[in-house]
Amino acid sequence: MDVTTLGKLVLALPTFLMSTSMVLLVSAVLDGSLGLPFWIPTALWLASGALAFHRPTEDLLARYLLGLRRPMPPEAARLEPVWREVTAVAGVDGAVYQLWVEESDDLNAYAAAGHIVGVTRFALEQLPSGQLAAVLAHELGHHAGGHAWSSLLSHWYGLPGRAAWRALRVVARSVVTPARCAVYLSIGVLLLAVGGLGSTAAAILYGLPLLLVFPYLSAAVGRRAELRADRHAAQLGFAPNLAEVFQTMHANRARTRRRTFAVGGERTQREPESAHARLLSAHPDFPTRLHHLRGYL
Image (cartoon, rainbow, N blue to C red; front, side, top):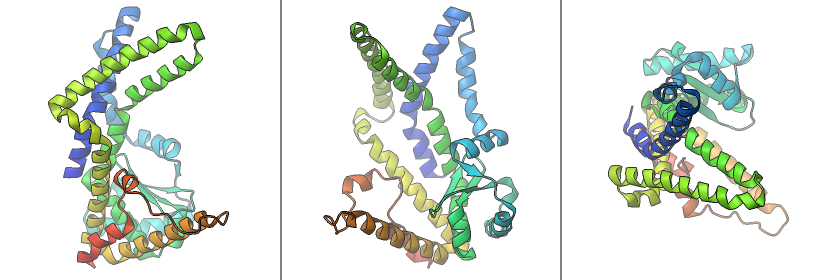
């Protein structure tokens, strides 16, 4: 676990506390109505994060959440030798991880949960072996730094709070008009309670002003995680190949934007990405990533 993983977990604490308050509320309702001991639902929810490292659960995540599939024989014959080369250079057991393919025409790859490594069909078919190895080394860097499992756990333990908010919105839209005031009042009371808990936790843990910059901090941690995964691949000797991949992706994105803004004949110049959008992006731009690779080329 590197420092970016630690930062990601720290930034997930307020969301975790809000979700915990929702789980405690549901546990109290079940205890009062069904007689189910209060601690059982809460304990089960807290322990459920271990499923992120359970192989059958990872298969379900890969198939139905990420939309991945197992490599077909020709794809496995191409992918597995390259993966063995990367893991041999890194000094890790490649058999620990599971290789997956996404049916996509984009150049992309994934590291998820505890053992998932996925690449798109386009990357598998179009990239030379050296560049494919560099991409896989980058994803191995996410696993080596703990970025994959910490992202999944942060998302998982934030689900109850997000689900409660969505359920309240659905109820507010579906009730008849005379009852809406009561529903909105209930929502307001609940939001005040949850907001008070989150504000108190933030004041204790970080200081309340940091709540305002929370999205920017989270995005900054994500960008730093990408740069650390790049460095992991570079330290294994894949920096030149990784730089070629970034140059290709940067050129493809520029061509796509030019085509997009040329439609209609009114806007022919590519509009630069705003500073605000860059601050909220979880990935650094390609020139920045290439700059950080210069020392390894």
